[in-house]
Image (cartoon, rainbow over all chains, first blue to last red; front, side, top):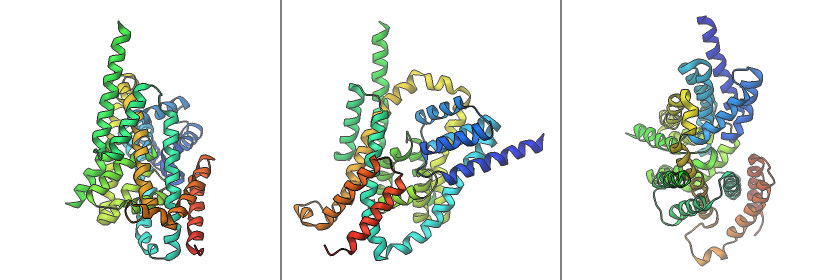
Length: 187
Length: 187
C-alpha cells in the first residue's frame, strides 16, 4: 500500500514535469496537455474536472499552471500529491531560466543580438496587443464592465495609480455593483 | 534582506494576479520598476525569452528577476513566492470548490476583475510601446529618427502575424530577423 502511494507521487511528479517542460507560453496553453496526460493517459480525473480546473484558475489568483497542478495533485493524493505535481510543473522552467540568466548577459554585447532584440521588442508589443484582444473577447460586455475597463486603463497608464490599488478597487466595484443588481432583481 | 524582499514581492504578485499569461505583466512591471530590479527594456526582452522557453510566464519571470538580483538563492525565493499563494488557496478551497465558485462574493469580485485585467494589459501596451518606439525621451525628434519607422514596420508585420494565430515563437523569430535585417541595411 505504502509502495503504491510512493509510486503515485513519483508518477504525479513526472507527469507534471513533462507538462511543465513541453508547454510554451504557459497558462491556458497547458490545458490541452494536462487533459491528455491526466484524463486520457492516466485516467486520474475526468474531462469535467478539466472544465472545473479552468473555472478554478479563472476565479483564484496566481498562474493557471500552478492552480491546475495543485488541484489535480490534491484530487489524486492529498497534500503531498499537490506538492509533488506543483514541484514537477515548476522545476523545468526554473532550471531552464536559471541557465538562460547566466548566458543572456554574455550575448547582450553582440551587435547581431542587439539588432535582433530591437526587432523582437516590437514583436513582443504585437503579442501583448493580441493578448488584450483575446482577453477583451472573453470579457463580459456591459456598461459596468466598460467603465471598469476604461478606468483601469486610464488610472494605470496615465495617472500612475498603484496597480495593486487598481486591482483591489475594481474587485470591490464589481462586488458592489453585482450586489446592487442582485438586490434590484429580488424586489 | 534581498531574499526576503524578493520572496514577499513575488508573493504579492502571485496573490493578486487573475487570469493567465500577460495578466501578470502590469503588476510585475510596477513592482520590478519600483525596486529598480530590471529596466523596462530588459523586461520586454525577457518576455521574448519566456515565450521561447517552456513553462508558465510567472515562474519564468520570477526565476529570472530573482537570479538577476540575488543569484540562485534569489531565484529560488522569488519562485517560491510566486507559487505559494496559488498553492495554498487551491488547497484551502479544493474541498468546497463548487460553493466557492458559486458564491456571490467571488462572482461579484470576478465581474470587476475580468474587465480590469483588460484595462491593465492595455496600459502595459502603452508602457511597452514607449520603450519600443521612443528611445531618448518624448519629443518631436522621435519622428525624425529612422529607428522609429523601422520599429513601426516590424510592429505592424508582427501584429498581422500574431492575429493570423501563428505561434508566438514564430512572431518572435520573424521580428528578430526583421530587426537584424534592418540593422545591417544602409538606412
